[in-house]
Length: 237
Image (cartoon, rainbow, N blue to C red):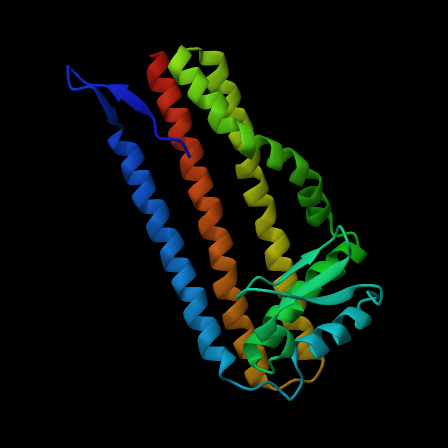
């Protein structure tokens, strides 16, 4: 997000107060959701699962969903777990790969859910995958285009920048159902595999907390887009 600059009466450049409000709201949303997921994860990482590690349960879930070819690899970091469709590998952080907690099983099964989505051709995941190269390009250039539009006072460039940024908003919105469905698959598998009610309840709490981070990211993107649209409209009036 690039701050919108204007000129005061002999006061030089200033930052739009609306932009400052947007920054504060975005920071509060981000910090609150991140704090919640970390707290929830820590709580359930202290509760033992039914005896298997995240890697073992993920492997079983993958095999049960016809994903025998999907590999499981270790990745550095904390909560850096992800599924990479490019090499068809599921990457688990050390805690979730070897850990046998309710939280590690929930996260591992969630990532296995993404592999199952790909194997079964889940529509929203196909849309998300198709958007990745477009979003990568738009995110790298939209700020530059917007800045040039403001400095050169060319409405066409600012409009183009907003259109480019809109792809990021669409991507965030498409990501929501993909993540929610992966969590649904994870909880369903944990339940159907005969794990205890504690595992099911804990998985729901951990994955719900994780989903809130995606909701916050989508909301922040929408607010940024609305801000850009409102500033452009005001400048034209």
